[in-house]
Length: 277
Figure 1 (cartoon, rainbow, N blue to C red):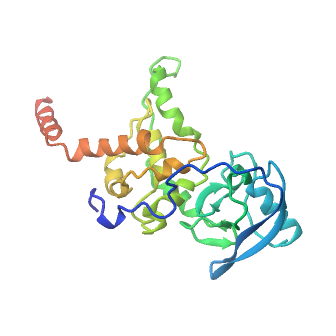
Figure 2 (tube, rainbow, N blue to C red; figure 1 turned 135 degrees about the horizontal axis):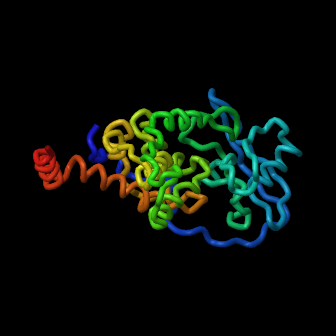
Protein backbone atom coordinates (compact mmCIF):
# COMPACT_ATOMS: atom_id res chain seq x y z
CA UNK A 1 0.00 0.00 0.00
CA UNK A 2 1.28 3.48 -0.85
CA UNK A 3 0.95 6.50 1.40
CA UNK A 4 -0.69 8.53 -1.36
CA UNK A 5 -4.45 8.48 -1.08
CA UNK A 6 -6.22 6.86 -3.98
CA UNK A 7 -8.24 9.42 -5.99
CA UNK A 8 -11.57 7.75 -5.28
CA UNK A 9 -11.05 8.18 -1.53
CA UNK A 10 -10.89 11.96 -1.81
CA UNK A 11 -14.62 12.27 -1.29
CA UNK A 12 -15.93 13.09 2.17
CA UNK A 13 -19.22 11.26 1.80
CA UNK A 14 -22.76 12.49 2.22
CA UNK A 15 -22.71 12.49 6.00
CA UNK A 16 -20.53 15.56 6.51
CA UNK A 17 -22.40 18.62 7.75
CA UNK A 18 -21.74 21.74 5.70
CA UNK A 19 -23.16 24.17 8.25
CA UNK A 20 -24.03 24.03 11.96
CA UNK A 21 -27.58 22.95 12.79
CA UNK A 22 -30.08 25.73 13.27
CA UNK A 23 -31.87 25.93 16.62
CA UNK A 24 -35.51 24.86 16.74
CA UNK A 25 -38.27 25.47 19.23
CA UNK A 26 -38.59 23.17 22.24
CA UNK A 27 -40.65 20.11 21.26
CA UNK A 28 -44.32 19.93 22.19
CA UNK A 29 -47.12 17.62 21.15
CA UNK A 30 -45.94 14.66 19.07
CA UNK A 31 -43.40 13.79 16.39
CA UNK A 32 -42.71 10.96 13.96
CA UNK A 33 -39.58 8.84 14.33
CA UNK A 34 -38.55 6.70 11.37
CA UNK A 35 -36.64 3.85 13.04
CA UNK A 36 -34.70 1.15 11.20
CA UNK A 37 -35.89 -2.33 12.13
CA UNK A 38 -34.06 -5.45 11.00
CA UNK A 39 -30.97 -7.61 11.37
CA UNK A 40 -28.02 -8.90 9.33
CA UNK A 41 -30.36 -10.33 6.68
CA UNK A 42 -31.99 -6.97 5.99
CA UNK A 43 -34.56 -4.55 7.31
CA UNK A 44 -36.70 -1.49 6.71
CA UNK A 45 -37.73 1.80 8.28
CA UNK A 46 -40.86 1.85 10.43
CA UNK A 47 -42.63 5.08 11.42
CA UNK A 48 -43.67 5.63 15.05
CA UNK A 49 -45.65 8.62 16.25
CA UNK A 50 -44.94 9.47 19.87
CA UNK A 51 -45.42 12.31 22.35
CA UNK A 52 -42.54 14.75 22.80
CA UNK A 53 -41.90 17.36 25.48
CA UNK A 54 -39.30 20.01 26.32
CA UNK A 55 -35.87 18.67 27.28
CA UNK A 56 -36.23 15.32 25.53
CA UNK A 57 -33.35 13.70 23.67
CA UNK A 58 -33.56 11.13 20.88
CA UNK A 59 -32.85 8.29 23.31
CA UNK A 60 -35.86 9.36 25.39
CA UNK A 61 -38.07 9.08 22.33
CA UNK A 62 -36.62 5.67 21.41
CA UNK A 63 -37.23 4.39 24.95
CA UNK A 64 -40.77 5.73 24.84
CA UNK A 65 -41.43 3.95 21.55
CA UNK A 66 -39.88 0.79 22.99
CA UNK A 67 -42.11 0.95 26.08
CA UNK A 68 -45.38 1.85 24.38
CA UNK A 69 -45.32 0.59 20.79
CA UNK A 70 -42.38 -1.75 20.03
CA UNK A 71 -41.33 -3.80 23.04
CA UNK A 72 -38.87 -5.81 20.95
CA UNK A 73 -36.99 -2.75 19.63
CA UNK A 74 -33.26 -3.36 20.26
CA UNK A 75 -31.14 -0.39 21.36
CA UNK A 76 -27.80 -0.29 23.15
CA UNK A 77 -27.34 2.27 25.94
CA UNK A 78 -25.91 2.56 29.43
CA UNK A 79 -25.19 5.87 31.16
CA UNK A 80 -27.47 8.32 29.29
CA UNK A 81 -24.88 10.98 30.12
CA UNK A 82 -22.65 11.02 27.03
CA UNK A 83 -19.79 9.16 28.71
CA UNK A 84 -20.21 5.44 27.95
CA UNK A 85 -20.41 5.72 24.14
CA UNK A 86 -23.03 2.96 23.95
CA UNK A 87 -25.95 4.70 22.24
CA UNK A 88 -24.17 5.63 19.02
CA UNK A 89 -26.49 5.74 16.01
CA UNK A 90 -27.28 7.87 12.99
CA UNK A 91 -29.88 10.57 13.44
CA UNK A 92 -31.06 12.18 10.22
CA UNK A 93 -28.00 10.67 8.55
CA UNK A 94 -25.50 12.08 11.05
CA UNK A 95 -23.46 9.91 13.46
CA UNK A 96 -24.48 11.01 16.96
CA UNK A 97 -24.95 9.87 20.53
CA UNK A 98 -28.72 9.54 20.93
CA UNK A 99 -28.51 10.61 24.58
CA UNK A 100 -26.81 13.88 23.63
CA UNK A 101 -29.02 14.81 20.66
CA UNK A 102 -31.83 17.06 21.85
CA UNK A 103 -35.09 17.11 19.95
CA UNK A 104 -34.92 20.90 20.03
CA UNK A 105 -31.96 20.59 17.62
CA UNK A 106 -34.04 18.71 15.04
CA UNK A 107 -36.81 19.74 12.61
CA UNK A 108 -39.74 17.82 14.10
CA UNK A 109 -42.10 18.88 11.31
CA UNK A 110 -40.43 16.05 9.35
CA UNK A 111 -39.84 12.42 10.38
CA UNK A 112 -36.65 11.97 12.40
CA UNK A 113 -34.70 9.02 11.01
CA UNK A 114 -32.88 6.83 13.53
CA UNK A 115 -30.71 4.03 12.17
CA UNK A 116 -27.67 1.97 13.22
CA UNK A 117 -24.11 2.99 12.36
CA UNK A 118 -23.42 2.11 8.74
CA UNK A 119 -19.73 1.23 9.07
CA UNK A 120 -20.48 -1.89 11.13
CA UNK A 121 -22.72 -4.93 10.57
CA UNK A 122 -26.18 -4.68 12.15
CA UNK A 123 -27.10 -7.19 14.83
CA UNK A 124 -30.69 -6.13 15.47
CA UNK A 125 -32.46 -2.81 14.94
CA UNK A 126 -30.20 -0.04 16.30
CA UNK A 127 -27.52 -2.37 17.68
CA UNK A 128 -24.37 -2.97 15.58
CA UNK A 129 -21.46 -5.37 15.87
CA UNK A 130 -18.47 -3.19 16.79
CA UNK A 131 -16.19 -6.09 17.77
CA UNK A 132 -13.89 -5.32 14.81
CA UNK A 133 -12.66 -2.28 16.74
CA UNK A 134 -11.48 -4.37 19.66
CA UNK A 135 -9.63 -6.74 17.32
CA UNK A 136 -7.90 -3.77 15.73
CA UNK A 137 -6.70 -2.56 19.11
CA UNK A 138 -4.83 -5.83 19.73
CA UNK A 139 -2.75 -5.22 16.57
CA UNK A 140 -1.24 -2.01 17.94
CA UNK A 141 2.08 -2.26 19.78
CA UNK A 142 1.37 -1.72 23.49
CA UNK A 143 2.72 0.94 25.82
CA UNK A 144 6.43 0.32 26.48
CA UNK A 145 7.78 2.63 29.21
CA UNK A 146 11.41 3.58 29.64
CA UNK A 147 13.18 2.69 32.91
CA UNK A 148 12.34 4.89 35.93
CA UNK A 149 14.39 8.03 36.44
CA UNK A 150 14.54 7.98 40.22
CA UNK A 151 15.71 5.34 42.70
CA UNK A 152 12.18 5.07 44.10
CA UNK A 153 10.90 3.76 40.75
CA UNK A 154 9.21 6.96 39.57
CA UNK A 155 9.66 9.18 36.52
CA UNK A 156 10.11 12.89 35.92
CA UNK A 157 7.79 14.24 33.22
CA UNK A 158 7.28 17.77 31.89
CA UNK A 159 3.73 19.01 32.35
CA UNK A 160 3.62 20.15 28.72
CA UNK A 161 4.22 16.55 27.61
CA UNK A 162 1.42 15.33 29.88
CA UNK A 163 -0.97 17.96 28.53
CA UNK A 164 -0.23 16.93 24.95
CA UNK A 165 -1.49 13.37 25.36
CA UNK A 166 -4.17 13.99 27.98
CA UNK A 167 -6.65 15.10 25.30
CA UNK A 168 -6.54 11.66 23.68
CA UNK A 169 -7.50 9.94 26.94
CA UNK A 170 -10.94 11.57 26.79
CA UNK A 171 -12.06 9.10 24.10
CA UNK A 172 -15.18 7.15 25.18
CA UNK A 173 -14.94 4.69 22.26
CA UNK A 174 -18.36 5.55 20.87
CA UNK A 175 -16.85 4.81 17.42
CA UNK A 176 -18.71 7.70 15.79
CA UNK A 177 -15.44 8.80 14.20
CA UNK A 178 -15.05 5.29 12.77
CA UNK A 179 -18.61 5.43 11.47
CA UNK A 180 -18.25 8.78 9.69
CA UNK A 181 -14.84 7.94 8.17
CA UNK A 182 -15.44 7.44 4.43
CA UNK A 183 -12.50 5.01 4.17
CA UNK A 184 -14.46 2.61 6.37
CA UNK A 185 -18.03 3.75 5.70
CA UNK A 186 -17.97 3.97 1.91
CA UNK A 187 -14.92 1.96 0.85
CA UNK A 188 -14.97 -0.75 3.55
CA UNK A 189 -11.19 -0.94 3.92
CA UNK A 190 -11.42 -2.40 7.41
CA UNK A 191 -8.53 -4.80 6.80
CA UNK A 192 -6.21 -2.04 5.56
CA UNK A 193 -7.06 0.95 7.75
CA UNK A 194 -7.44 1.15 11.53
CA UNK A 195 -9.58 4.30 11.47
CA UNK A 196 -9.41 7.62 13.35
CA UNK A 197 -10.23 6.19 16.78
CA UNK A 198 -7.12 4.01 16.73
CA UNK A 199 -4.94 6.63 15.11
CA UNK A 200 -5.82 8.65 18.23
CA UNK A 201 -4.82 5.65 20.34
CA UNK A 202 -1.50 5.34 18.50
CA UNK A 203 -0.92 9.08 18.97
CA UNK A 204 -1.53 8.73 22.71
CA UNK A 205 1.23 6.08 22.81
CA UNK A 206 3.66 7.64 20.35
CA UNK A 207 3.52 11.05 22.04
CA UNK A 208 3.61 9.70 25.58
CA UNK A 209 6.74 11.02 27.34
CA UNK A 210 7.54 7.59 28.81
CA UNK A 211 6.91 5.37 25.80
CA UNK A 212 9.87 3.92 23.90
CA UNK A 213 7.96 2.01 21.22
CA UNK A 214 8.20 2.82 17.51
CA UNK A 215 4.96 2.40 15.57
CA UNK A 216 5.85 4.53 12.53
CA UNK A 217 6.52 1.58 10.22
CA UNK A 218 3.21 0.01 11.26
CA UNK A 219 1.41 3.32 10.68
CA UNK A 220 2.70 3.40 7.13
CA UNK A 221 1.93 -0.20 6.23
CA UNK A 222 -0.28 -2.24 8.56
CA UNK A 223 -2.36 0.65 9.90
CA UNK A 224 -2.88 2.42 6.56
CA UNK A 225 -2.51 6.04 7.67
CA UNK A 226 -1.95 7.01 4.02
CA UNK A 227 -5.65 6.41 3.31
CA UNK A 228 -6.69 9.33 5.54
CA UNK A 229 -7.04 12.51 3.53
CA UNK A 230 -7.73 14.72 6.58
CA UNK A 231 -11.25 15.86 5.72
CA UNK A 232 -11.84 16.38 9.47
CA UNK A 233 -15.23 14.67 9.42
CA UNK A 234 -14.07 12.56 12.39
CA UNK A 235 -13.22 15.67 14.39
CA UNK A 236 -16.65 17.14 13.69
CA UNK A 237 -18.60 14.20 15.13
CA UNK A 238 -16.48 13.59 18.25
CA UNK A 239 -18.72 14.12 21.32
CA UNK A 240 -15.63 14.69 23.50
CA UNK A 241 -14.37 17.41 21.13
CA UNK A 242 -11.00 15.72 20.61
CA UNK A 243 -9.11 17.49 17.84
CA UNK A 244 -8.53 14.19 16.08
CA UNK A 245 -7.20 15.45 12.77
CA UNK A 246 -4.94 18.32 13.78
CA UNK A 247 -3.57 16.97 17.06
CA UNK A 248 -3.32 13.23 16.32
CA UNK A 249 -3.50 12.25 12.66
CA UNK A 250 -1.47 15.05 11.09
CA UNK A 251 1.45 14.73 13.56
CA UNK A 252 1.50 10.98 12.93
CA UNK A 253 1.54 11.57 9.17
CA UNK A 254 4.46 13.95 9.69
CA UNK A 255 6.38 11.23 11.53
CA UNK A 256 5.84 8.82 8.65
CA UNK A 257 7.02 11.42 6.13
CA UNK A 258 10.06 12.33 8.23
CA UNK A 259 11.14 8.71 8.56
CA UNK A 260 10.44 7.39 5.07
CA UNK A 261 10.11 10.26 2.59
CA UNK A 262 12.45 13.04 3.75
CA UNK A 263 15.66 12.73 1.67
CA UNK A 264 17.64 15.06 3.94
CA UNK A 265 16.54 13.13 7.00
CA UNK A 266 17.57 9.85 5.38
CA UNK A 267 21.00 11.28 4.54
CA UNK A 268 21.53 12.47 8.11
CA UNK A 269 20.61 9.03 9.44
CA UNK A 270 23.14 7.38 7.13
CA UNK A 271 25.96 9.67 8.32
CA UNK A 272 24.94 9.35 11.97
CA UNK A 273 25.15 5.55 11.70
CA UNK A 274 28.60 5.79 10.10
CA UNK A 275 29.86 7.99 12.91
CA UNK A 276 28.84 5.51 15.58
CA UNK A 277 31.75 3.43 16.99
